[in-house]
Amino acid sequence: MHPTPSQTIGPFYGYALPFPDGAAVAPAGHPDTITVHGRVYDGAGAPVPDALLEFWQPAPDGSRRGAPGSLRRDPTTGGYAGRDGHTFTGFARVATDADGAYTLHTLPPGQNAYLSVCVFARGLLHHLYTRAYLTGTDTAADPLLASLPEQRRRTLLAVPARGRCHRFDIHLQGPKETVFLAFP
Figure 1 (cartoon, rainbow, N blue to C red):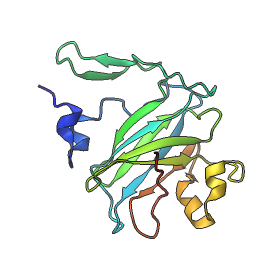
Figure 2: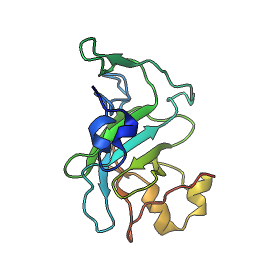
Figure 3: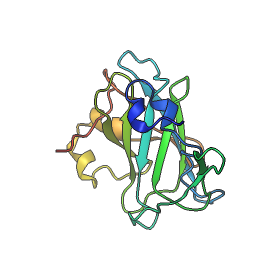
Figure 4: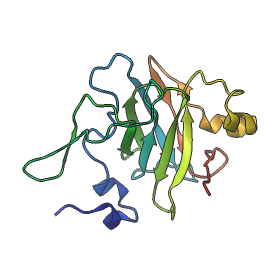
């Protein structure tokens, strides 16, 4: 029997919630695929090896409809067998590895230049929300970025890497703490 998400409250996020191809949001082989990668760090600057990140974004055309039903079921186990490889859903669920690292393959979001991120990690009684702004964002045009002091704004900006890659590290506490968002 597979555990349900409610059975994984605590430091076991990486056990039952990830699913095969959870980081492969872009359809297989899509030429516009971008990679977002980074690490999650705790307040002491140590990598968090069992965090879970969820990403949401609009499609490249700006639509926010999503595409439910892209997950396939394994006919033998009844578990998730992974994505269908061609449907863009705008949703990803990625666990960090032993070094606190994660990698996401997606398409550039339309209408906004950021990915919404939800962070689950040990020691957090409530998950955290933040944004990962991609390279080339006009920081003066975005109301949230424009409202932040420069030092805090940087925590939301992905750093350009080679090719179509962006690095976005998340710091849960400390002097480099990422800006987290509160929703009423």
